[in-house]
Image (tube, helix red, strand yellow):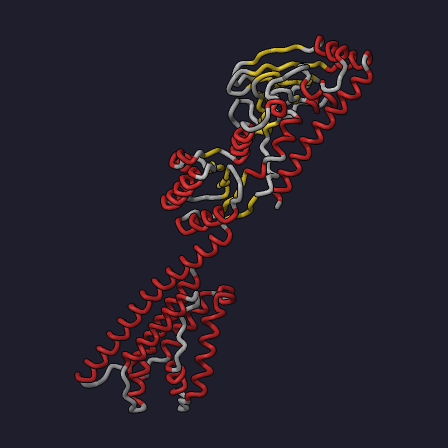
Length: 458
């Protein structure tokens, strides 16, 4: 905005200079030239400067000759130096002019414009004929000043719009994730996770930021097309996009149809409120975690049954029971209590003190920061064959999160610490394997959390 205002002020001074220069040449130097040529040149130079993102300053020698006329030495050589100074201001002013107080710049320009007005024009002539010419001169001066200011304002708005689009387009994609390192917080059994890890390169994630307009959205579409290789799903994370317009919606819809014809799904995450309603046909998700979870579920449709293991097969202990002897496994299963929880039912409460280890047999269990289901931040989604509550189980600390059954019912088995302690004394070798697998599960979760924190800090 300060540069736009500065452009307006400079245009006002330039318009005054066109008229005053020729009046002075006629009244003081008896030089008669056509003001139209100078006005055309000034207008062309201002438009050219605006197109190249420069401050529309005057680069002609006419102002220099006017200023030097007060000294009595109107030479072209010095005028050329003055023109070079003005050109330097036009080229580099956007780098340093914003550091100067706008009031000082405006005052300097206004003083420069006023000083160019011949002294004779500040006094009312004695005769009526001269008074008419004097009034007409001031009328034309005002007309040039107003029209020049309006044109400079339009040019400044055009330049600022182009600069805004260029800047927004250059930084609209905050980060791209094409190596498949991003994962959702949906925890599955180890074999399923290992299979997914080798296929997540088929999911491309683009983090967006800034205002999303038609031109910016077009740049996003071009970047998506350029970086897609053999992905099956594209996720645009718009959690850092504060504003959308209808033209951006249209561009994304066109991209969604184009990718759909190629067998690629387009997802939008991080949109809220009316934006989510408008983009309902683009599969909007509340956050990136849920979009990644949807993409993972689509990839798992191609996963072999033996690697997917969506149901708890074999031992109800899931991964913790692999490699355990049948006798030790049956002895531990006898001490476990299994219960079915209805949809959205509260399973554990944050702040409670108990040492139960939970293992999901069927359905899903959601860990969050809110007591009511569906609210707060989702910390994890626990699938069949996966345990949760291991920190309280191992260390005896209070619960740090709330656990709810998913949208469907959840079948959960519970293992008390006292039961495990008595079992471990009877089966020390199996207990060592159990604790080793539990520690590996904790390390895997800590690794996923560290990766999320690293991505957030970058």
